[in-house]
Amino acid sequence: MTHELWTAKLDSYLDGELESGEMAKLDSHLRECSECAAEGLRRLQWKKSIQSAAARRYLADPKLRERVQKKFSREKPVRRWWPAYAVTMAILIVLAGIAILREGSRQERNSRILSEVADLHVSTLASSNPVDVVSTDRHTVKPWFAGRIPFTFDLPELQGTPFELVGGRVSYLEQSPGAELIFRVRKHQISVFIFQERAIPGRLPKVGPIDARSFHLDTWTHNELRYFVIGDAARDDIQALSNLLKSNH
Image 1 (cartoon, rainbow, N blue to C red):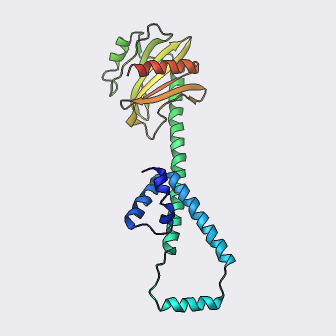
Image 2 (image 1 turned 60 degrees about the vertical axis):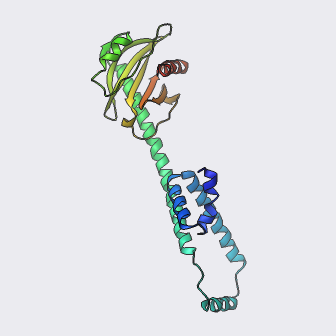
Image 3 (image 1 turned 90 degrees about the vertical axis):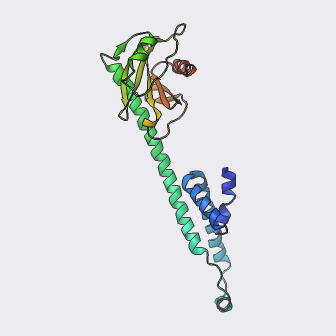
């Protein structure tokens, strides 16, 4: 169901006019959708403001209030929806707050992951032995990872490109092993990290390029594997190497 269909039911939801089944469905949706929860809170505040203004402007005579109360005390009690209205308001406020906190937590988690990837690249640059298998031949580098990481991957043909494969090593992200491949282009070193997507908490951007510290970085997923391409080379070089890797999927 689209956002428009959900939001079309918000007024009836706030007024307690939906059937119990529809109320439950919309309540469940509001717990998962920050946009609809925020819109519900906005409408709720708007309704409350109108009712408050109306109460101040049209203050009834106390005697009229007594007559109305006596009349309805002899009739069937009307449905009292204000308690449900107050509960709904509280739920919406809490849901909106939770959604904001979740979004902030997600962004913080993503930033931490990208920072860790940048740290891994810096560690490789600073290492006197940046690779464990030294070879420009992809048919040598790829088999070396067999038994060292819990997945396989393919490497592209680099002949006719400005990129050169230097070698590879096992790297760890969130305590999960993965492959780090080192490439060189015009004296710049680029790291390509490959990890299992399930080993990385949260949802990272599916496609770059983005910046991580002073490096350019591209990231995407394929076949449940998460790829990171990072380096201080030009953004176009990072994107070109990423495209080579993607074309080999």
